[in-house]
Image (cartoon, rainbow, N blue to C red):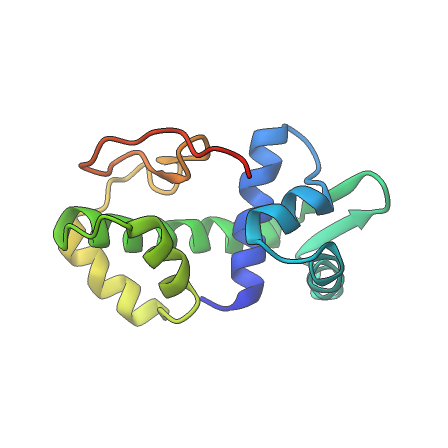
Length: 145
């Protein structure tokens, strides 16, 4: 998964949470980047036809952007479940965020065979806990910083 996919995933989740366009500030906060960096990547996504950005209103993903975002979210869920359920990594969220940028589709597909992904994935992702709902660990909601 590349940086663009991380942005697409984040925009998708924020759109779902806000039930409308994702604000640049929310995207920047979620990715722990500056609003200027978020704006730069949003511009690139818009050039690629994956997002539509309207100043002061926010960002919406196009149909192609939604498809890529859901694929990225599914990969993230696979990584989380592998780390938490198979390896027992306590800090699986942080590790999954680090790994999602370097795990390619081949590795994600192989991890998927180990975790027995559910058919509802990626709809299993819970933005309140920032985690896949199919994790075999107790989850608490993530507090905003």
